[in-house]
Length: 273
Ligand SMILES: [Zn+2]
Image (cartoon, rainbow, N blue to C red):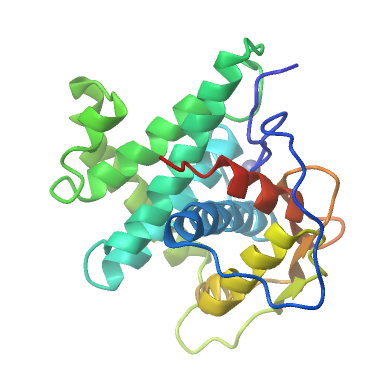
């Protein structure tokens, strides 16, 4: 078995127990707060990561270095900017991004416990590196609120000392992206970006979708993308059963697919202690 890589959100070979099948008659029970933050935080990050791939591809944005790193930095940086625009990094939104980092760390730890081979060759950074990259951006954006993050995460002081500069670079790059490729004031909207939910196959997926729709998670992200960019061609964000736990931008199908298996897996990964 290879080491889990979270390929654009794929968590391979982890926690393979099945979720119970969906029951159609009763409304599903709401997720508890801890589970909602962990699962929705990760789904939000992965959705924005896939939208970063879409924007880079559709608008032909030049990228130096691995696109996967750029997509992670864009996603983390954009989510932090949104939080700041709304007046500081509030606890629940900050917790969303911490949850996204934490899933990468958990994925690494569980792969290591199993002695799974490490994919040094992969286009993605190793999951433990992705964890530290997100944690560093969050700490760098707000070293006061997240003062204990380096110590809690095991980040060496030398890395932590550079996080403010790392965040500032990412923030400048996003400003450049918006200034160069963004929708200008007065320009009409671009092609539509829709959100569609296919029938969730498990009770867990039903509960996750209910919570996503309650807070308007995907709808808010997609609306913001429409404000910021004029997409040349329409696309759809679709949640569906795929047979594997992943999220992916599929340019040929014009779809960002978020698999229900990923929602199930994130639910099972939620730290309970
Ligand atoms: Zn990706």
